[in-house]
Length: 282
Image (cartoon, rainbow, N blue to C red; front, side, top):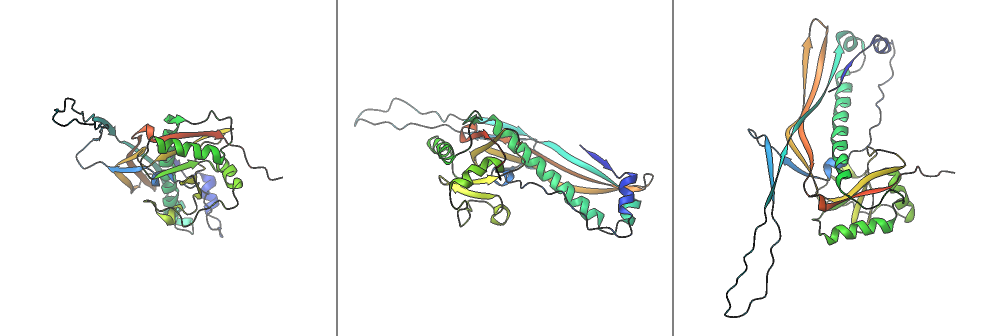
């Protein structure tokens, strides 16, 4: 949990006679939450049980001969618990009184962005546990992209399948074709208005999305995965609360969520470990 308190310098900045409209640090888009399967923990429960059954085999029969072999349902059960995530901001009365903008609206957006970024990164971290498709020595080409899509189709991984990579990883794909986008946008359970800026193209029938929250280095680790590969379990939705502290002469804004990001079935996804170099502009 992080705590932020306004300093004297920050108060002086807020107390200018004329203050420019507050600027926000631009956030990266966060598509991961839209691309995984969602679960809700019912009231009174602390753990979600996710059963999975295996495959059965049908056999040829001979007329008049009894069937000897029986099939096993092959059920396994995964248990998932949630953990609380949150942050707190302290706003002094002086800051609230002398800032000529709605400081609560400013802070509300900041904590909301922080929570969204946290969830996105939690889901991104799971991609590193999937089987890698490259050792990070190659750039992501259309051939590699199609190969991973083919591997998942051969599993077979349930549809829909999507890919999320760092913008630098996606650049070779965009330059390999004359038109990077495929229209209309893929809908498949996604909110089109929310993903239209994330979608950079569809290749091998798999939509590709950019996510700058993926750690940037000489290589980066994105992923191609089925919606049934990753899960998001929510026990408590994002909730905020204000609390007055008279002796401090200020108020606290606290936001808390209770959730867990987890892998449902690792065979339904592959890590996209490829080079991540900035595009050449000269």
